[in-house]
Image: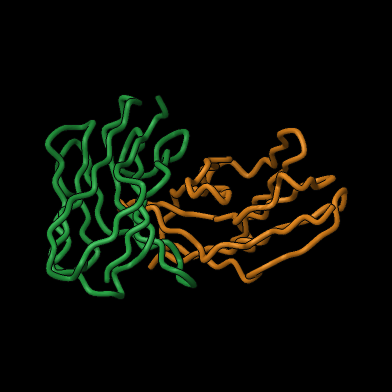
Length: 113
Length: 115
């Protein structure tokens, strides 16, 4: 069965601090896709990244970076030099051979000035 | 226009009412989804349509009835809802039913309150 676990319910940091959001997943498939989404107060989910199970190369996009480790079934997300605008709820998600995009429970990030 | 548009943004309905939520995508995707987001609960997948056929129905109560007349439109028909159905209902679309190469794109949601 699929499962995505985001153990951190809420994180609070001061602006310019680095912060890592954890994501652990479960699937029986060898081919799967992992995602991160951001949900600002306006409500819509904003796609940030998708990775497939065959590509463990870490990725950096500006202040965002992602660390995918199949050995630990983790897909962690780091924001470097956080800003107030990064305050949002962040969701990790998984899809495999089934037609399901399953989300974790989300991590609320508060960046204080 | 945004990629995925949901209407209405807010809806208050009585338990005996019938209403419909509408979703329209302008991205040329062929898969569409309904999710429910309640307070203190994870996003719950309700329905998935791929190429206008329902491929997933996550044991959703029959008081929720989806309709996908074409690849650009998705409806969620509501009738005799319960107060616990109050939630944010999110529509999404993607290139395929597995979340798409560039992820699923979400609308801003309909905030539903059942009184």
